[in-house]
Length: 221
Image (cartoon, rainbow, N blue to C red; front, side, top):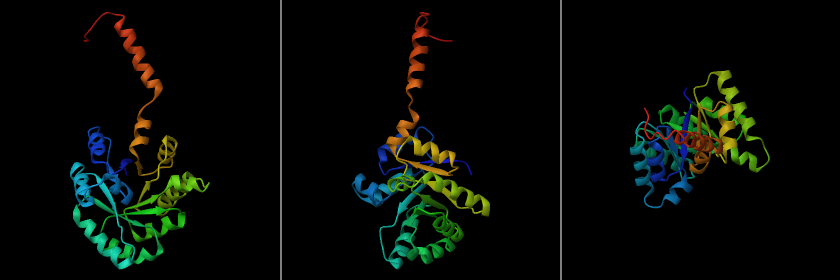
């Protein structure tokens, strides 16, 4: 699997901007992102799907009761062929996730925090599991270590589930998620901007520009 980068946002303008770089393979949304985007959530999701027709767009269920979650998941999946339905990794939803997997509904199982949770979801045959790196750090647990555990487990047993690192709080998390072998890292706009900038790059450009101007030549070649 080729390593992918998703944007963790529902900001259509930012998605459109970054789409033009050719770097973005998908988007992860959640109820918080969609509430910040304002407007009709369904319309926002469809706009994002249209912007990235070959990308994978994660859209999370908002219902809580299992039967309602199942119905909502089916409805979300019908919005577009490139949607991944996000469902929390909660034991109450295991039967639903198993049923949806058999019905070939594409899923990204979110809020994964342990190796065992990840194993259970891999056994059900979901498309992605999303371990939340930053939230581990909030309780003084090394989230990156769990990423390594999940990577080893997936490879050791030959599961086809993708490892999607989420809750990326900074450049360090982004770097470590890549080194841990994540198939996908979903990154907030602010982190992606910081990751693609570097002081030494800027200084190098300025130095080359200054040296070139000393030649007094305006065009090349």
